[in-house]
Length: 143
Image 1 (cartoon, one colour):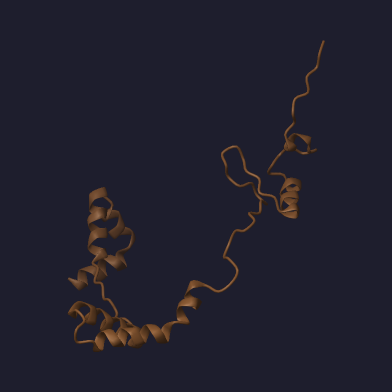
Image 2: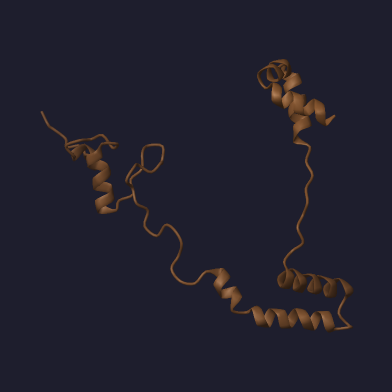
């Protein structure tokens, strides 16, 4: 009778084969391993190397180094009478936005009305008014 050796997985050679055990989580953290379950999800304690922000300056920092040159180019476009009007207007708007900040955008929403309609559709308006009489009285006084 011949015996054939079957390759064993690394998890089966460990004393505790449960990948969620504290021992295995600690092992992954200590050795900085990235192990995955059969569905491809990272197991607890796994460490991805090279993950996170790259070292060195950010794009924002690099772009800010060219602020003076960019403003100079925008000013030249605004002052150039031969430039297309759309380019001059866009450059002027960009200068104003950077110098004074963008104008606030006001959005007016009527969310309360839509919520009341939803409650009526599902038949909960009567129970809502019964459970919250202060809100119902305030709405009646607004009308």
